[in-house]
Structure formats: structure tokens, C-alpha cells
Length: 142
Image 1 (cartoon, rainbow, N blue to C red):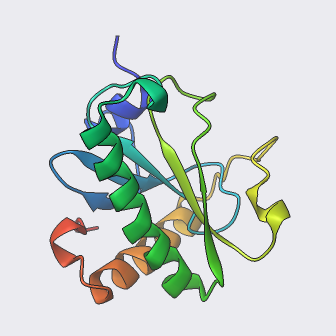
Image 2: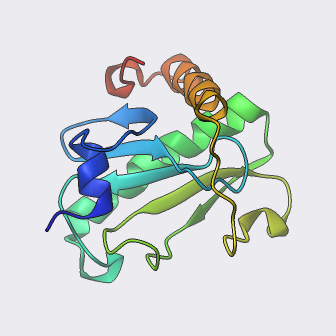
Image 3: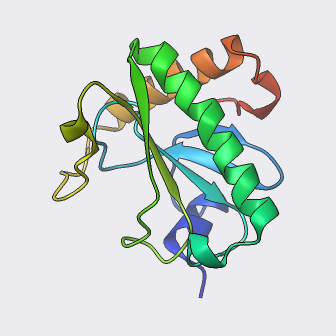
């Protein structure tokens, strides 16, 4: 059975994509820490980052680095936080979010953002920043 993230990648479920390449995608989470909170997910269904092929993990962290640069630029944040927790969905995913202080990384008990406009505007803002940073080939159209 495909994971929730595979269903999003396959467009069976909606997602606000900000990055797509043959190996990985990035889309905004529906339960953001802050606007711009993005998940980097490999297309391959890998349950745990500790069992991932080293090349796949390196590619995903490279995408996370680019997305981190994008969220810093788009929200004028001093840092981009990165978390690999893997408890919510059994499919490797890397959380990337603009941060200002350590408490910005508390992922417990986050409310779901039900306003698609809010997520869409955040995705547009991040796509623009990624294109401006030199990643236009990976930025999907809206």
C-alpha cells in the first residue's frame, strides 16, 4: 500500500509542491511550524533515514539545503531549521522551516492549516525564492 507521501507525489492527494526532480520532491506541510515549513521527500518509499541508501540521503539533504536557502530568503529568516523525525508517516521526510529561535522547532501538537490560500501563497513565495537562488529547473509550475 502506498504511503501518504507517495499518494501526494502521485497527485492522488493535493500538495503545494516547491521542488521536483527525478529523485525527490518538496512540498509544504499542512501542519506548519511557520509559514514556509516544507517537507523534502524521496520518491522512493524509504521508511527510515538510517536505512536509506547513502546517495539517496545525500540527494535529499542537498535538496533540503536548497529549500533551506529558499525559506531563509523568502521569509528573511536568520536560520533554516532541519529535522528528520520520521514518526508521523513511514516514509523518509526532512522538515525544513525558517526559524528565529529554538522553540520554532517544536513539532509537537501542530494545528492543521485548513486555509488552502495560506498554503498556496507560502508555496508561491518559496518557489519564487528558489528560482531566484538559481534552482529554476527544479521549481514546478503552480
